[in-house]
Every structure is written in structure tokens, then in C-alpha cells.
Image (cartoon, rainbow over all chains, first blue to last red; front, side, top):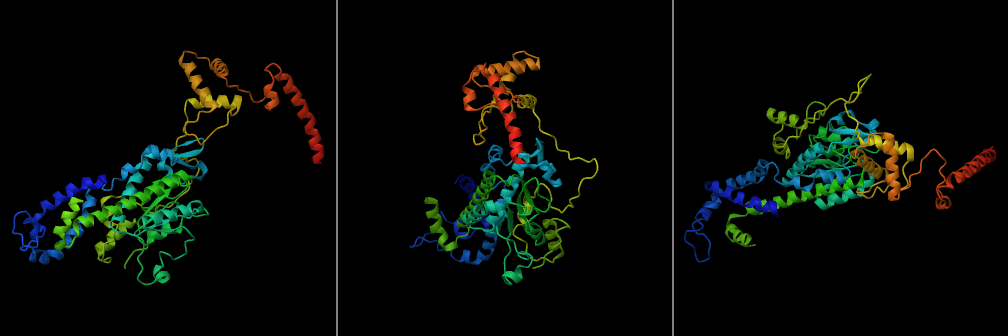
Length: 288
Length: 176
């Protein structure tokens, strides 16, 4: 994968710069006496001593490094304003249905139908996808929520493809706020909730929007011209009624989450190997 | 785990940050660093949705093009046009679209009189093979009538009108 290949040299350089922190035997790799088994005899005690520190540093490196790039997962290449236009993302509802807080995101109204500003949508979408990718990279639990029956099946399949969760059925009262009672004492709430439709079937804001804000869970949501974008952490102004648009969103989320998880696996392989196996494995990995 | 359920007070981030600073929330949530590094364009604070009253209007502009004037005239004169709109095709050109293009072409050639341009465009389209029927007169567009020549058309239209006029009172009586 192209992003992984460009990231690799930088990661290797990063390793060299902080060479002091690395276990001793890596520095002595090229010179140094080789025993009969081919392993570094002089290096054995060093890794054991510095491993707890080492693990902590590696964890920090794995988690901190992606935050330094503005687009670590390259989500910008997944869509363009043209592809959003072709998926009819710019079509809003009629001017009578307009929500007051959506006015900044609307480009204008064509014969009474609101047209959403796709330039703004593109920037919001990039931020939202980036956030989703980082949460997935950190092994966060993502919940897809929607109450639109037309796309229920599609969203459940999308969640299954990413390996995440979806809730497209009736949202019971205390699902997030009273989770301890409903599920058990040790329950882990989602770390991110993605709304593909912010409204429920009676055109009121979905209960989960308010509940996620209550439980301090960040949300990403597609807000149409009749939705309230206030409480959603990363709103994406766009059409949520046309099938091409919803298919596009599902594809984008699925791709970003899978990409982020793949990146995480690669980073873990690069860094978090047990030190004894590292010499053999790094050789095999570089050759493959 | 400590938390604050006041969704109307500040954003999710501000509440979490303050709880951690106060020492109430011990572990940092997963998303905290990510939000800090990539904050959204607008802080997600709660706002009360107040309605507009009186003469206050939304500041959203209408989207109009110069071609809309030509389109309005076309639709009032000819209705939708003979060809049905195919919305599945992204590069579809309707009769109105072709009319507008021809109109602009003729306008660029130097014509200024609007009515004259309108008539000229109609003629040009006729030369290309598109027959535009004016609405307002009775629309006798059945297969039999289309086969008739242009000269016979007014007579047939009158005959059709008489027939419709005869049929309507009959229909009304049967209703009663």
C-alpha cells in the first residue's frame, strides 16, 4: 500500500534518531561477535532490563506518530467534490423544511430546493473521516446509528464489513445512559457514534445524539438541511435521502475504518515484536 | 467512571478536559488526543433553536441563471417539450436545453430583439427536426393526428374541440 511504503522510511529514520532508547543489540547488529546460533550473545541482558520502558515508548510512538501528520490515513483521496456531486450529496430538502442552524452550510436555493455547499461538505467530510480513522486506529468501538428503514440493511452490512457495530432498530430508552443496568456492570460504551441519519422516523432528532453528548461520546453525523447539527461533534452537511449518497457514505466509512485497522496492524508488526524474535523476524519481514 | 451529563453546557471536549483538570476523571478517553489534534470547524456546543419572527428572513440566496429567462419563456409557450426527460442519464439534453443553446448561439451572432430570437430559435429547431407544439391551443397529439399534415391540423383541432365540448356536458349529466 502506497501510504505504508511512504510511512516506512520515516519510521525507520525515527528509530535511528532515538537510537539511545532502542535495546542494545540493535546498535551492535552489524559488528559484534556472532555466536554459533547466529544470535547476539552480548545483547541478551539489555532488552530484558529496558523492556517495560521500551513497551511504553513504543505504545506512545504508535499512538503519537499518526497525530503529527495532517492526513495520516490519506482520506482526502477517497472522495472529491465531483464524486460528491455525482452521488447527489448536494441536494437538500425544500426551503420550508430548512433548519435554522443549517443555513451556514447551504449554498443557495434553486426553485425552493436547498442546495448544500459541497466545498464545505468536503472539508467537513475530510475532518470526520480523519477522526474516524484515528479512533479505529486506536482500537475504538464504533457504532453506526440510523433509523431510516430504506438503508437499514446496507448499514448493518457496512458495519459487519468493517468489524464494527450498528444499531438501526428501535433505540430503547436508557441504552447509553443506563447501560450498566441493561447490559451489566462492566460494559464498554462506544468510543464513536456515526449517524447516517440524524432524524428518526417522526422527523425528530434521534435520541442517541443527545445521549452521546450526555455520555461524552464524540459523534460523526450526516446532517441534511432539516437536521440540527449543534450537538454533533463532526457534522457532515449532505443529503441523507438518496441511495447513491448513502451508498457513498457507507463505502467511505468502511474504507477508512479498514484502512486504519490495517495501518495499526502494520505499525504493531513494525514495532511491537518481542526482542528475542526481532532479529529473525525483522530479517524475514524486510525480505518479504 | 466519572462523567458529566450536561449536554447543554459546553462541548464534549470542554467537559472532559475540565473534569480531567479537576482530577475527577482519571483516565484519558480514547478520542481525547485525536480531538485535540484535529478539532472540528465549529465547537459542538448546544444552541437553542429559536424561530425567526416578523420580517427577519434567512440569508440564503436564490440560485438563478441567465438561461432561466429563456427557459421560462420556452415552458410557458411550449410546455415540457416533445421529448420526455430521462433523469437516469447524467448527460441528457432535453428539448428545452437545446432550445436554450440555440437561442444563445443566435444571440451571440448579434440579434437583440427577444421575440425575433425566440421565433428564429423555434425555426432553427424545426430545421433540425424538433417539432414544438404550442400549449394553449387544444393539444391533439394522438398518433392519428400526428400523421396529418401541418395544414390539416387546425381543422382537426376544431373538430377535436367540438367533440370535447359535446362530451363534457354528457359526462357531467352522467355524474349527476
